[in-house]
View 1 (cartoon, rainbow, N blue to C red):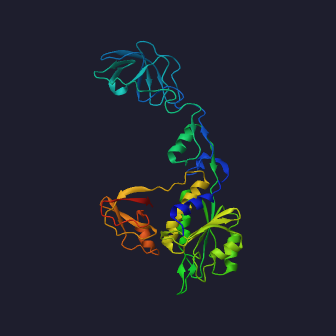
View 2: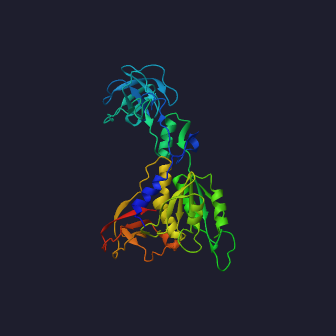
View 3: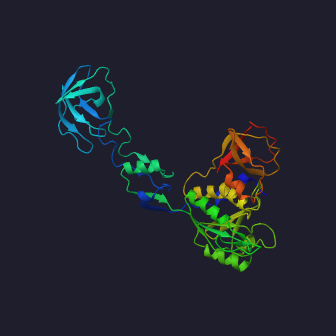
Length: 388
């Protein structure tokens, strides 16, 4: 049995970068950028007005008058230039005419015919956005980051119609066990409804993977071997259940018979002790526990970082810090990922930490992380946690 950190290091060693592909920017949200985006022009490409008003040359004191000689609108620049005593009507985003040095906002002038008069206490800001104020031609969005909505907008502004991204890792999900039926099927009195692969698929798709839920594998070598054969094209194979040492826990032996190179088996954590990982042909493989909460917690701690590394992202887990809302007793010899909720500005561990209770996980805001043999903690003590 190895530590969480050692297990995670082994899991990350299994990661192979997915190949890049070029896609339309419109479909690139949440994908991972695999090639720099280079701006084809500056933004703005010209000095632009920040407000509606009048573009003038020089200063504009109280009572100053200017003759309006034209107009500059967004998309249609004033073709001439502005000299002393002259002004051009201008609108937000429009090019600033040649010769103009500032924009007097429309609230600070009165206009009669083609003459404007500057009011008392007019603002002195120029209200001109310099050419290239946002970015210059040749500026880059660097690869190795997610294309968030803000980055998508920036890429579009830079002129990128297509972008190079990391291919989505394909994850084959295999639930195992004679006791399982799929949602929508009618279980016998001795069966339960499979949930692990559905929750894990949702979590992995949120990370950017393409999750494929395969048919449930029964507790026979032939059924498991058939499921593994269906998963041969995947980048990652994730099994749920059958990874312990009971008479019906066949994932390890069947995978070994198919050539899996096992990296480790069993992790000093709760929930999630019966975890295995390795390489099966060209695919990474992780065998998750069968208990629902154990599977989901191990998915967050191990599978999500592996996927991030496959796509070229930093794999680090987002570990944050917060005060405890309630006291906790001393922890045992295994790291404990406790389901917790926010209460009175701190984290309160759920009363029950049973690894089969999905209702507790569904209500949780965070996984409160207790190191092995962590001493008793009082309310107000700072603890580590992972948001979920």
